[in-house]
Length: 126
Image 1: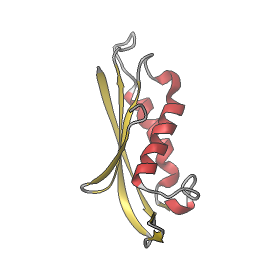
Image 2 (image 1 turned 120 degrees about the vertical axis):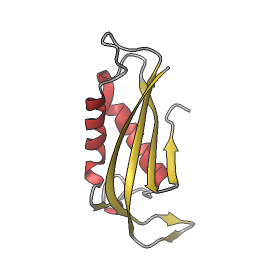
Image 3 (image 1 turned 30 degrees about the horizontal axis):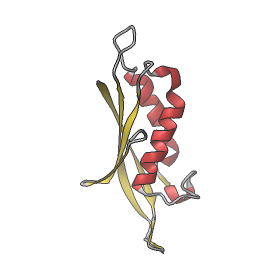
Image 4 (image 1 turned 45 degrees about the vertical axis):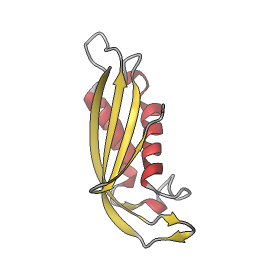
């Protein structure tokens, strides 16, 4: 099995609802790590092109950067937890990458770290 790791970061605020109570709006420097995995490589010996995958990731998080997630789709209608952010990024990566991945490659996981020691990981195929 081959795995490549692509990372980016963005700064954004949010206020999540926990047990019916909304916490105060606060900001984070979010770190995102995407793992792409697959058992085979393409004819060039690649699982995927790092640059293409990185650009897709940057495009996905661009609307969040320097914004309040609670006012930014889809989190204007969804609690902007690290877990749901990770799932959103994974779903968007899978939808947008298409032919950029070798035939058997897929998004293995997305890790979203909102502060040191606090991360959520979503595995779409688990």
